[in-house]
Image 1 (tube, one colour):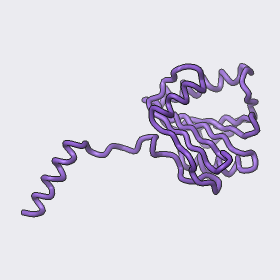
Image 2 (tube, rainbow, N blue to C red):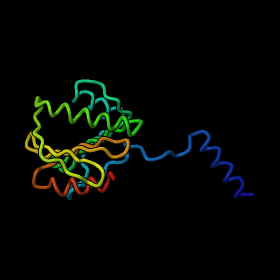
Image 3 (tube, rainbow, N blue to C red):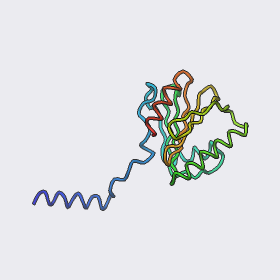
Image 4 (cartoon, helix red, strand yellow):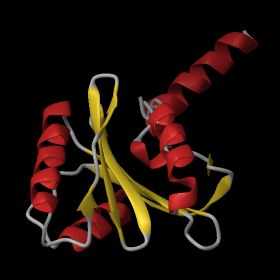
Length: 160
C-alpha cells in the first residue's frame, strides 16, 4: 500500500512538473579544461543573445552556453546548439567562409582532422582558437597558446 502510494505521488509529480529530458547544452560545459576550473558561465537565452551580439546578427541557434576557465580567461568555450546536424553544419561552413574573407582578427592555420570531422584552427587576439561541429552543436574554443593543444584535446573528447 505504501509503495503504491509512493508510485502514484511520484507519477503525479512528474505529470505536473514534467519528466526529466535529455541534457541540454546548458549543462554540457566541462567543469575543468587544462587544469583550469569553470569560473563563469552563461547559458540559454543569455548565451544566444551574446552569440547574436558577437556576430551582429541573429543565428539559427536554439540554445547555448559560454564558459570561462581560470581567473585570467585562460580558456573560453562557446557551444551553440541548433535543431539539426544540418543546421549546425551550415553554421560551420558559413563561419569558415566568413573568416576566410580576411576581415576578422583571425588568421587560419592548417585544419586538424579528428576522425571524420575537421577542426578549424586559428590565431588571433593573443589566443589560439578552434571551431568544429559536434552533432547539433557548434563548438568554439579559445585558449592561451601555452595550453591550447591540451585544451583542444580535452574539448574534443568532451564533444565527440
